[in-house]
Image (tube, rainbow, N blue to C red; front, top):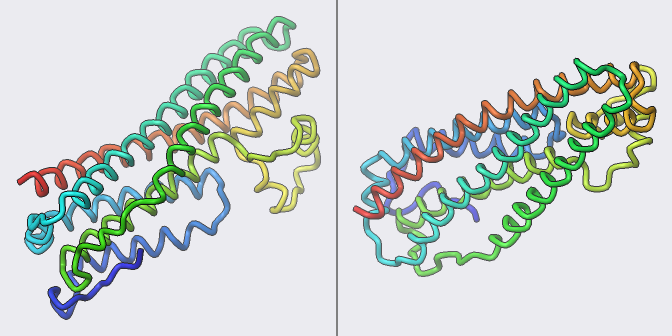
Length: 283
């Protein structure tokens, strides 16, 4: 929903915090078109943290608090609270998916380090791949829940020239862009929906390092590990395939570390923002 930066009730010049929120929203919207690489997603998560920090500062403004304190329609107020809780739920789903994968990666790396190319290693690899399937199912469920939140009311009972409408619209925009980034993150962790067979991925990985950018962006760190581990099973845990899998796991671990830290910071900031919103609406 478009945000009316100026209204009859707001000053002719928007508050600097409002302008900053708008700028951060624009940056995140423009970044939606970028490739879903690990670095781009980490950048988006960092941008979301800045956005929610800015929103919290917006909620501290007397003008904002006065606007939201004039609750004349409990439905939109409850929707704002439900929306902030929804963001925390989705964030928790992403954190759980990353944590579960991280633990499996660490265990598998330790086993590969100890056992090298032993035949018995394939059973441990299959355990990891089974765990990945469970993570993907959980992500699919979370994504389905996201899709179920699109048809929400437009709080039409509010006067569009009123500051309350402006603030509520702004908070809804923030919620929408946050959900969009989380959707990108969950899709990245899950891997491409219609990716080629594991053997095709392995073939690409084994080609010359002079890979064109279009091909490189088709595979993310999670998909690369899945392909390397399938190769490990196919070659009956040979030493070269075990070494390749270990290297791919190293890259994935670094990717997970960056996203885990960014998610944790964002999660704490969203809790802080929700508390501020609760204090205003329940005042």
